[in-house]
Image (cartoon, rainbow, N blue to C red; front, top):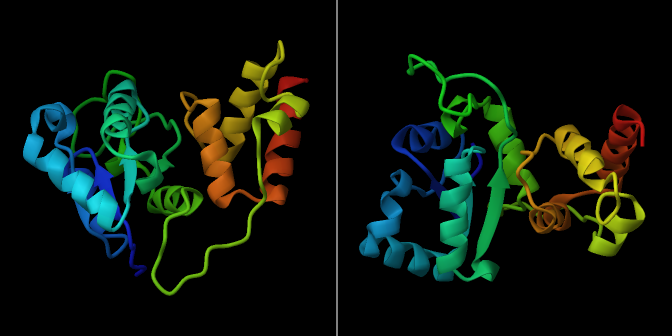
Length: 200
C-alpha cells in the first residue's frame, strides 16, 4: 500500500474509510458543508496545508464542487492539489436511491479510479519520483481547439470524457491537472479520440 505525503481532504466519513483502505494517508472529512462554519477545522486545514500540503478529493456533483471552491478560497493555492473523479452514474451500495444528480460519490467509484485521480493530481507518494510530463498552456488549448473557438466547449467535453474527468472542470483546473501529471501521449490520444467522436 502506498503512503501519501500530503493530507487528503474528502467530504464524509464513508469517503474517509474508502481512502484509508486504499492508501496510507491522513484523511480528513469536511463533514459536508459543516466545514463552512467550523473555525477549528479550518484552522487545522490551514496549518496542515502549510506543513504538508493538501489534496482535495470531493464528489463530482454540485455539492462537491461547492466545497472544493470554498476550500480554494481559504487555503493558499500553492499548498493545494486537486484530485477529480469522473462523473459516473449510479448509487452507493449503502443507499436506497442515488443522489440528486445520480452520480457516484468518492465512496462509490472503483478503487482504481481513485488511485488514477490521485496520480493525475500529482500527489507525492513516499519513495517515488514524479514522472516527467509536458507543459500545457491556454495557447496550446486554443491552437488545438480546446479553448476559445466556436466548437471548443463541445470538443473539451469529449476530451474530459476521454481522460475520465468531470464535465464541470474549468479550463484552469484542466491545465493544472495536465501540468502536474499529463503526458504528450495521453494528451494526443484523448484529443484525437475527442475530435473523432465530436466530428471536429
